[in-house]
Amino acid sequence: MKQEQIRDVLCNIGMQVCKRLFHSLQSQSLEERSAVHAESADDTIYRIDRDVEDILVSALDAKSAELGGIVLIAEGVGEEGQPPVFPQGAHADRAALRIIIDPIDGTRGLMYDKRSAFFLAGSAPNRGDSTTLQDIEVAAMVELPTTRSRLSDTLWAIRGQGVGGFTRDLETGERTLRPIAPSRAKSILGGFAQISRFFPPGRHILAQIEEEMIETLFPDAPLGRAILFEDQYISTGGQLYEILMGRDRFIADLRGGLYRQMSREGRSPGLICHPYDVCACLIGVEAGVIITGGDGKPLDAPLDTTSPVDWIAYANPYIRAEVEPVLRALLDRYGFYHNKS
Image (cartoon, rainbow, N blue to C red; front, side):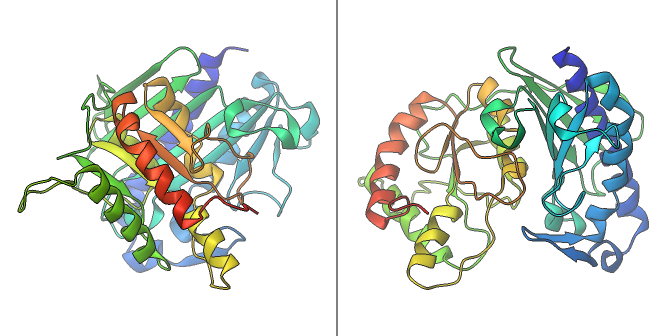
């Protein structure tokens, strides 16, 4: 099977989603696109999410026979616990591929016309329920811009073959090469680096860990100097994009570890990252970004819509060597990954 063909299918679906949303944002009111369509086990599904579901179904169904059959894993699509199979009526165990998609990662930012969201997709050989993020061989992400932009980036990766990308003008269709260049800086000092804490509860705990990490790394930083900058981009795809473009040097999303710890203490957890949020991380890996799970091991999780995922990204080996030992010691002290359940 040609992986380039799978890449093209994923990128084309993403561009169709982008086109649909580009027009929807201009024609629908904020109240229309932010209306709640449904509450799923893993997140809230808004009207803007529902508007692109038919694109996924029709596009994958049209290409599924040619690709040997597809099991689709996507939030809110198919029966609860039963992902749809294409061609329709085919058996899941006979499909060649499992494709996981987040049609709009960063829905809230986009539906309020604040910041770009991203279409994310990853394709893996179908190994049934044992298929994981580590099995993904092709990944794609497409920028879904706000009404104030006419440009959209499309990025992709094929395992072992590197990355590529282009910028598309949504009005003229013109494409230009989009370089992918993670930062080569040897320190996070003076750059953008952050621990994600977009949602309550527990933001103060994550902020405290970050503060202690910075104090340990830079105890002699001069007074009045901006040691670090942060960007709380409420889109995992957006966070990955920023590190791919060389703008961010370090990102850690540790909400899963935080909420497990809070649950053990009898406190209510909050919204976490899921496998579909990180399904395009192969692009980062192929670009040279070092991406691990919250426990420091290679990032992995089942290909589903409900499993909790923590992830950490270092722009390069120098950043990892600087940050990881301090961060690991802090996470051990805070008990994030002890007695994991």
